Length: 464
Ligand code: TYD
Ligand code: MG
Image 1 (spheres, protein in one colour):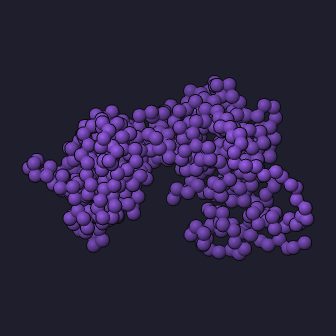
Image 2: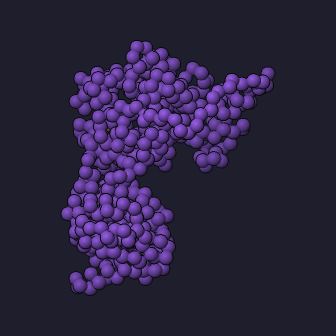
Image 3: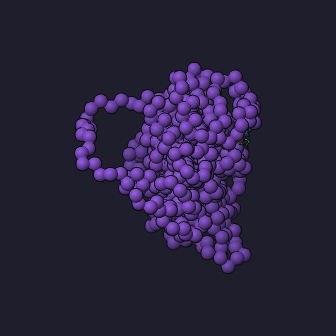
């Protein structure tokens, strides 16, 4: 028998090495590599040692055409949650829910399990972090003390699977969190990559054999990665992240990966003293408390999946006292800001080299769409010129390096949402097909960044 080689695994990304290193080459983490016993990489271990079989079992291969049924689902009863999963929990699917500690994962899942249990489904909530009394206390506080959820505080995966397979399998089982689980099949300590992977494998097998939908909670590190369980990401059917900063009340549920539904939908919640409340009209919330007369704010008409979302983009451009001007951005991409600034300098005639630039997306939202380029540019130009933008106008459009503004998808939906919220004008590139349609509000079509700069300068002249 071959001597078992020691193996070392990175605790943050799961990369496996045959000797210890101070820095992980795969993820760049320092001091994250730990020796693990047992087969750290199941892809190498069992496959490599398996004796080659002379004859395998013959199985039939099938064509693409054939009967395909829509996956059976159980709606959670929380609309914002179902929007993200694509209509409810698919039977036998496994969801990894990631998020910062204290963001409200346990609260959300307690509310979802109570809602499901009240519909008559069997729901099990297994907490590896809190005692039963603590979970009960939270449920009580949420006004859900009477919901027939089955609770336990357990960390051994074999015991959990044995308990849950007794009787009618639950419709939903929640494992809070995967980092606290351990399986007897692996020798490493709980929380290590090997344990997390082994436990997840056992729970995924349980989900697939019984048809129970399983939600695994995973904690996230400072830089936004799902720590340890990153290795679980490609084993599960869906990865959903729960974000927001603790300074704001908004919480956003976002699918990062979804085998059974969309990945661009978001669910919006508000944390209150009675738990998470759904926010069906997020635009109203994100625009509340808007300062109309200040230079440097622009309203961006964005899209999150199929839902339009209006949000304020704030910019501050101020003379710098440093040799190296600062560029700081919250809620948007730093590279995107650099690009917009470069285009404004090269094609818009702005001089920003001696100015600090700050950009913020109000409400703690994070925007990923390139369509926000124009709104960010408008806020920046407005701040630099000291001229407030018209308060009844929304902005959207993608900017090219030449300064040309390109049309973006779903313009009619964005305009409709803006009209619904009382805006009367939109500055955006309008595509040829949209020109023929009847638009719900006046759209000032612009094709180049110079039009935007000229428009704001003309407004300033008129005001003075
Ligand atoms: P929790 O669900 O325990 O977070 P996680 O499981 O992601 O670590 O939520 C923790 C925070 O939520 C806590 O700081 C208090 C706050 N909270 C409320 O504001 N209202 C509530 O009704 C509840 C239950 C929690
Ligand atoms: Mg928790």
